[in-house]
Image 1 (cartoon, rainbow, N blue to C red):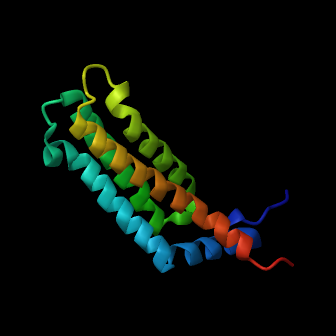
Image 2 (tube, rainbow, N blue to C red; image 1 turned 90 degrees about the vertical axis):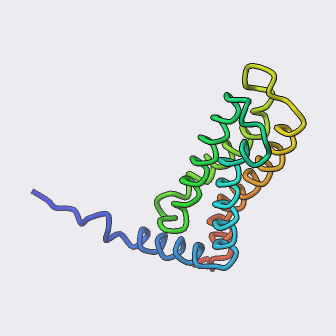
Length: 145
């Protein structure tokens, strides 16, 4: 019977973890993560901040999407090597936030809801793209052997 070494010992995996650690320790990545958490918290609380909590379907949507965005982007700083693909989920959540006032059944597209969701969704989308692009930017700057 042959035994194979654990995947944990593979040199490519160690190099990848080092690269991801380098990515998340930069001030840019830390700023993106902090802004993402603030954006997610704002999105979750926006129905009560902006004043459209009476529009229950959109208020519940924003609460759930905001919390999901916080959880999604919050895990990137501590475990980026395992969660970096979730940054694309954050991009989708940002895009959904932009179209939610028109996509949710009922008359949800008031001025308050549209302005709040389009701005928060646009910021969320950009932050998700920034975090998703962090690893590819570092990969391109790595010297080739």
